[in-house]
Length: 290
Image 1 (cartoon, one colour):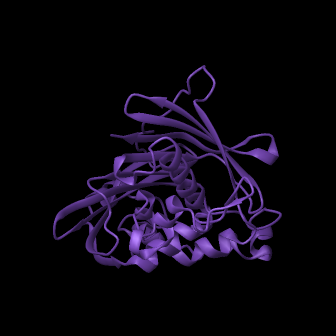
Image 2 (spheres, one colour):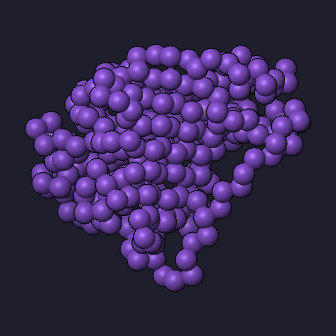
């Protein structure tokens, strides 16, 4: 059934309540590799890592917004009026979050989700699902998920913007490598994304992969953690916004190579798979900061 763009865009936002506490935060951080070894050195008791793993010292990495209150709840937007798609044709194309203030360690909030935009790419559609989250003290964050749906273009909509971040011609200001543990996807999925693509070898083969792949949003969180820990002096409250385009896959057991270029008020980032000739993983990636 073709997408009815006018109906989808006019639909009322889907409202809900979400909550989290320190256990959800700690589990998410552990799923990103917090507290593990780096360059052969254990970080389990490192004071900087305890901010991610110990409840008495905890701060919240802003990318937690992508899993708060049930993880992939954003995909509920695909059930909006005017949209009927086969989930087998759905790809997570990009993700952005805007922070209105630091995320608290414990929270109860309201979530309002809607289809913010629909773009017609000819052979595919791009659905922008926007989620706005607020608590009793006001807005917390706004999250946009760009969902690419194969075979659903041709409904007569606009092609939409092309957001391309040109990387500087100079060498990166900093390069970090982050190893992905063999079991990391199994741990990360406990934060809410239960897609068997990330755990079941037989399912992964049906999807065309030799073995399960890492969640794109896990790479997204690992990258932000690397930027915060190195360029932003470990201060999560400095992050104002963070966006990326999912450009390729990475497998558990591989290594993320994270290149960073500092500019005024932002960090440009390139993320590749080190063992596969720097195959792209994340592109058009920007961390805006104070």
